Image (cartoon, rainbow, N blue to C red; front, top):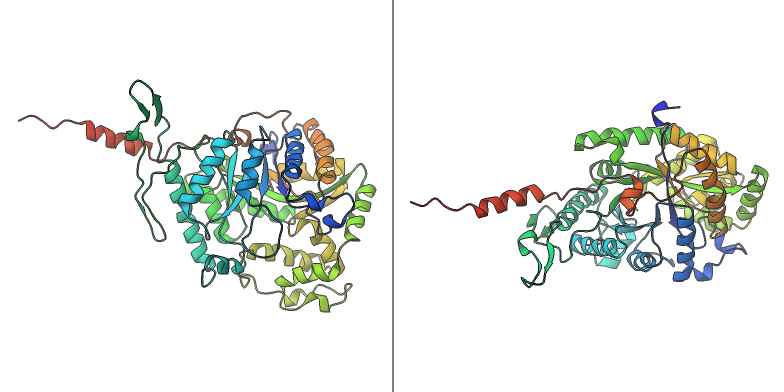
Length: 455
């Protein structure tokens, strides 16, 4: 165990997803899937999160396929008025949006929430998204990440186009805005040409917290360059440590230090007072699974239809698609899922059970003390700075974690006992970024104010 991590404090987000993250959650009698389009449902989850002093609510998103997922900006803007502390993380693609729209919407959310907005930066989840945006095809991974890096550069410059003191509200002078402190950005890159300025003042946090989700090579590099938080799927402590050390090492090439990026793997816990009770809950949910439906979903990682194999046959890992061949933007998740089956020699039945709640993220089933031990081990061993929690069912699975695991972590000195800041950045221990254009604009004004010599 790393002695340098003795004083570490955990961070937690909760991942919002319908009735819960277990594939059969909506079938369980304790769930209320008919309410997962209702604002009150998510407001209740948000209140539980604030009771547990969670850092943020996390919303995923996609632009194709069947689903009942509310659009993130709309949902989180509504929740901003119903919450006081918890952060609001919206997933938005850089491939199927424009920087000006995204910069404006996140600045608005940050103002509405008084500094609690965060952007989960993704480059495109599915090749089928392209057809919904009039695109002939889904860009390849190299182009997506190149576009994504430039996209983030543009949004940062737009947020910086207003100096901090540009709003003056000078009634006597009849001036609300000092126009000399609002600037065009004149960005011209390979993918974007944006004049600016943004038509809303700089966000309260400077920039909304920037999150990156993914473990691919491109994702790691984008996170090291731009992100404040990275979400990742890691099945073992060893893999988590390798990822953690690799990404933290990359920060130096961008002039950043290790405390400027938090690494938060996903964790799907099933918790009860005893391990036996937790195992019973897990078995109860797994019994509700539709094996054929679940196998069809997992078949996307393979060159064969898994429904044609007996449930007690070994997972045909030799039929896995080559890494990098999947065009849905989840190549790194493919690697995690298939490697787990290969490493542990799973049968298809075991593969289904392992994948049912975590969807590639690590799952843990055990008592309150065992769950706290698991979290502490990953924190102290350099595998995580915190976790993105995937409750198997709402509300009960999340309430058990908040009401039992959180107090145990507090008793161990691993988690706060009160919110420590007013903004999401403050609660995450992240500095507010300076305005990137401030020095250049000061020099420009100085030059403009110089009077020519009289001759």
